[in-house]
Length: 320
DNA sequence: AAGCTGCCCTGAACGC
DNA sequence: TGCGTTCAGGGCAGCT
Image (cartoon, rainbow, N blue to C red; front, side, top):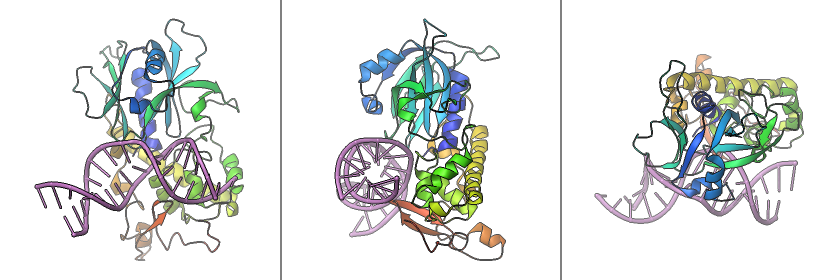
């Protein structure tokens, strides 16, 4: 399950291998992956084929390639090719004659290009997705309300795809503001983990990293958001950021650059997880301090939450 | 506003 | 062995 660090690794790979190239042909092998493109497969194909990718941008787990008319370079772009990896999506750069993946959904043929050292770059960009929770679609670009860049990318165009405009900025976005997040957080009457998973409040955090960050910062998932003080907010954001940056550092070095990876599991290194999936195993912070505390798994929001009952005591005024 | 449920989907890991 | 059930997850619609 790719979370933000995995998607950022993909973004960097795409930026390096696809920027400046034209999408010469589009082959849709499974229309279900275009579910969110409401105008249908032919419209998708017609819009994407012949377009040139001018930048690759990400906000939270939404990733998009800014398209410009290959025949009119320099015109202000107005559409983006959006991709969401969902639970099992991959974007792969491969040679066109490489065997087709079992779950290949969309295939984009890229114009010829060479690397810095003059070697030819592979010509296929493939979207592979086993569970089809992810997908691709074309989105209209609109101005960002704050005039800041739409997300993390090379250019600083203040544009955001319509379908991503309701998604909040993520902690790796230079325009992310802890202060404004704090203000909005305090205005909520809910529990901290719910808030962290609310992509409209802060984006890019999934179940695994939420648990990791809560453990690292020592907060219970039901901590009422309206009791968070500024240092509390700073602590949880610092935890989220450091968990993500650690995963990013691991992911960024472990992938073959040409294989713009995105295999869900690859970005995580299970041995590095402190809380998620460690039910019944000792809390490492407690162990370091001479206590034996076993991590617990609790059912929460129809999924699992892992926590240390000593480091993350349930608050008296807990919010579900 | 907030928070439920259900849906989309596959395949691994179970129980019998 | 084989068939059935359960679970996992992000995002969103539709409801209370």
